[in-house]
Length: 444
Image (cartoon, rainbow, N blue to C red; front, top):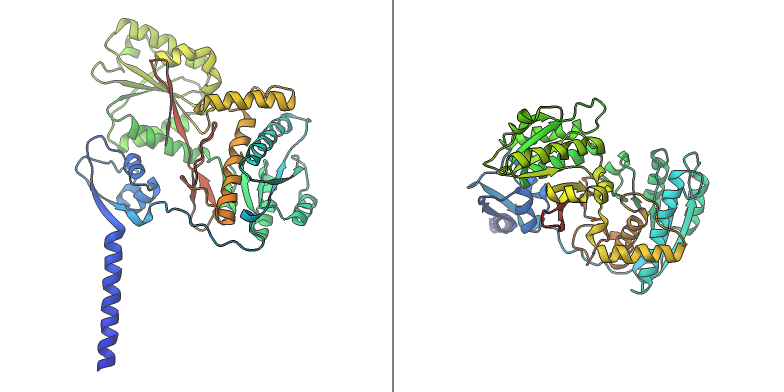
């Protein structure tokens, strides 16, 4: 009887401890006017995905956050401070990092020339890391589109790299992914968006997201950021436009958030075009085309509109593809309060960007390729982030936000762990060309 009582007591105490732990693992939050899902998650040190997982209703496309709602904040799911593990004999934190690069490194075509520039950015980062006491051995292999990478992997096995940047081509993904799994090597996919291997390989870090996921995320951020605006979707009447997928995702999100929106066309007469705009609320215009010619037509119509209607306040929401137009369209970008969503922007750290651009010219006796964003700066950011992470945390580095003082030149990196798989970068931003002439970056 005494033994049974002790057993019951242990069970009761265990349940009590479990309840106490769970009581401390969450808190409730009453939503205030103007708050967004992203803002609430960010202010509580958790990811948006974690907040949505704790509040199942948020997973529905029709969910809309309302003032007065009571939601759950999962405190224990906040991104933890990554613990540094004890060092073993061959721990990467206690020796020179072995970095592999498997990309087309040649002068035969555009792919090769672009990847050579990216590789030079990696080299510049390694040079900078020397001043921090971080040493790197670099092993680079040219892997063009038609390469059989099996001999390259045999060479890599001999040096056992801690990290490999590559590949560029999807056809090489399976072999390199399996190699990194067996070797315990971190695999950074710097550009490809086609990497189904990430779903089951915990060694993969993918920098760029597939368009569908990015469209959905950007549309959701749009709906949260521009609450109180009058959204206007402008049709360019171009059957070849690639932006229909985004405006479709946007319309779904606007409907889910009960945000009324207007539709008009670039070909509409000025009076019909003007009828889509509000004089009571600020207007946010979305063109369903990334073509420069369509953008120029839009700016002409907005000029006529605002000249005839002084009470109309206009902002424009655009695309990453408009970044190369900044120099030629900068006046209009500021005049019409343009927002551009992008994974990279060299203006994030203009002084450092200028310094590295000059250093590149000095080191390699040439200018960077006219490509947006500059690929050498991309390589610099990637190497700095991952090599610092390996040096501090070793093979357990997970790439989450806040692991160390990372100030990107142009590429925000903030990785989230996929269930049973690898790590996907969620770092993204709006570049905002303010009417005051300033440019700000808004991370999300």
